[in-house]
Image (cartoon, rainbow over all chains, first blue to last red; front, side, top):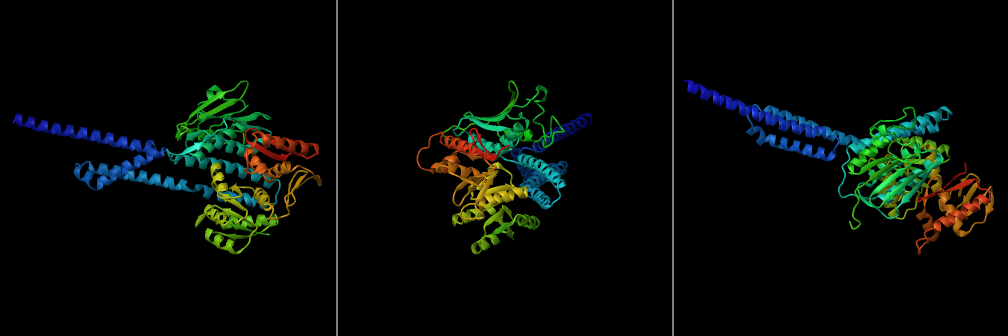
Amino acid sequence: VIRFKSIISRIVILHVVAVVITSIFMSLALSWLLNYATNNIHNEAMQEQAVSVGEHLTARSDGVLELDLPREVRPLVTAINLALDRLEQGFRIQRDFIADPAHELRTPLTILRTRLDILEAEPIGQALRKDVDGMAHIISQLLEIAELDAFVIDPLEKADLRSVTAEVAEFVAPLALAQAKDVALLGTTDPVWVRGNPEMLSRAIRNLAENAINHTAPATTVEFIVEPDGTVSVLDHGPGIAEDERHLIFQRFWRRDRSKPGSTGLGLSIVARIAELHSAEITVQNRRPAGAKFSLKFVPLKSSS
Amino acid sequence: MRLLVVEDNAELAELLVKGLQTAGYEADILSTVEQAASVLHTTFYAALILDLGLPDGDGLGLLREFRHQNNPIPVLVLTARGGLHDRVLGLRSGADDYLVKPFALEELVARLEAQLRRPGHLLGSSLRIANLEFDTRNRQASIDDQPQVLSARETAVFELLMRSKGRVVSKKQVEDHIFGHSGEVASNASEVYVRRLRKQLSERGAKVQVHTIRGVGYLIAEEK
């Protein structure tokens, strides 16, 4: 009897151990899955993978998984599947939301702007127009960030860094001249092919350029330098970046001077995100006697490709 | 002179028409690519203001189709897509100019007029900055209403700069404009003609400045 009892208790213990080990293993695996899925929400490529893992589980849960599993575990798998479904739905909603918010936001702003343009109520009209322009700027930058969060880079895409930089320099030159500042494009005049999306590269460089123009001292020149190794640098003659602020400047909404109008604290975070997506290296240096130099080094393509 | 506004947001379309009226232009409104395509076949408009995000398609397709049929109507594109590279793509599809929403009405009218003052699309044909004037019909430059004699190449550079008021003209554009696509051009050719033009203008009392944007191009602006 004692022997029988101990055999029974051993079997029970074995069972318990087996169940415990299985459920620990399951919960680890599932929590890893969930973590994997949720922690990488900002990374579209990972999102896709996580969603496809979710789809696998869902697909299998209809047939094999739920049937093969012990009854006790089925509710857990079903719950996880539902969670993954909701996650997937969340991604879809986010993608759809980002698909065309530009139109939804910019059109009413244009209506407001045009109404103010027709309105003959100076000087209030002028002040209101300035407010609308400021808001339009913030909305543009928020849209850029939203787009970036959902952006999937095509690994085959390439861009000519030199011509993208020239486009940006052309675009910002009138803004600089209006503030009695100047821009110059230096470095190589040959095409510099790098991996990346031309529109995204253009946004990164434009944000560096606008930042430099805003900070450079009056009557100085903001310089763009393109190098054959895939580096573009933007140099200004402003106050430079203090050592203890370097890790802050790329954070969203960080501003040195909160009272300064027109600055959203988003520009450099856009640059950082684009660099990250393109595996580009950002460096920030101070110049002597004064000024900052921001460089982005993209992945160059061999001239033959 | 009638303009055509193709914009699917009725409220914005009405406001634009109202704004254009205060600047002296009459305009009709359409809201789809399909309507625009058929109306433009049968009706002459001096210029087209085209929104890109239309309910039945992308305005760029319509634009490419026109250009394919050699329809020379000046087209000013309005878009909610703010990208710089999008802008370049738009211009390559045949738009004459490109405005990102939201824009100032004043800017819309200025860009429109720059297009309407091309020979053949005559709205009065003169381009003005400060005390400078350029008549695109007889290609005559004047300062304080006094006609000026400039060489053919100086005139060519001057015209290009005046048409691109407020924007940078690239060195390549200047070279293409002076020399066409024929033959080799010395690397400093554009600089030489711009420098001569600048000297002529300042000696004759023009209150403008021709800026050189190093490595990029040139821009004409009122003297500060």
